[in-house]
Length: 271
Ligand code: LIP
Image (tube, rainbow, N blue to C red; front, side, top):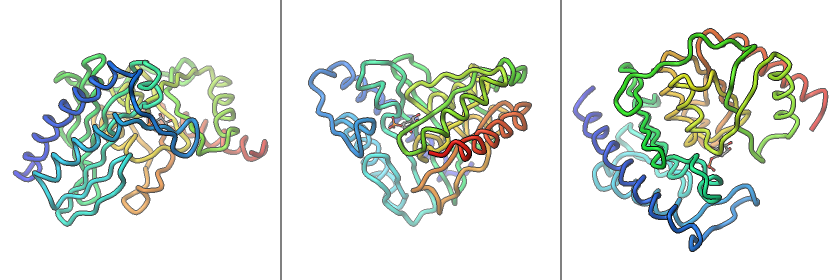
């Protein structure tokens, strides 16, 4: 890594922990938190999401004013340096607001269109996942790897769902997965479930549509942990998001087939 990247990685390490501390402060006082409904009752944010994003955005902007920054709450600011920071200040907002601990801060650093750093920090458990492209993936400093023994007929997958996709796509995938002998969990944080694939707790992950700030760091973690991830929209598609399919490498064909079959099934069922 060159000096430019090293300086940014050092800042990322510091600022993601500060962000975690700030979020924990809000989590301790949920009863007084000011919340806001965005597109509907399942799309919510609070002053905590905004304050945490502001903290990261201001730190990045002060140190690297020419970098781009894309955050869930306050959108995209373009830059000229070739670096773009992609941050979800609190991924798993619904868990956070309901007092559940499945939330995290997700931070990715992209250089010239390719992700070179991914971090997922879960303050409530003290777990800190980090990957640098070409250098492996780590949980609290120890190397991690995907579950190379997982089989689809006994797999535990993570799955995401949200109001943006037709309900039948979710039910069709669940039907295909259960029919194949697999099972799923769905926590409120896509970033965390992806990190759990990277460290072998989950065999894979599927979400028909997820935003870039929820998955960019997690996808790098999985690849650096030896896993497979389907192509995710490149830079021109970031603001739209897209489907995420990711798993231990031996499950690639089986999981891809399940997804394809579920999309066929959803078509015949209609939305
Ligand atoms: C959420 C995700 C969740 C996904 C939702 C949503 P938020 O992010 O991580 O897994 O299914 O689409 O985007 O709103 O908690 O940051």
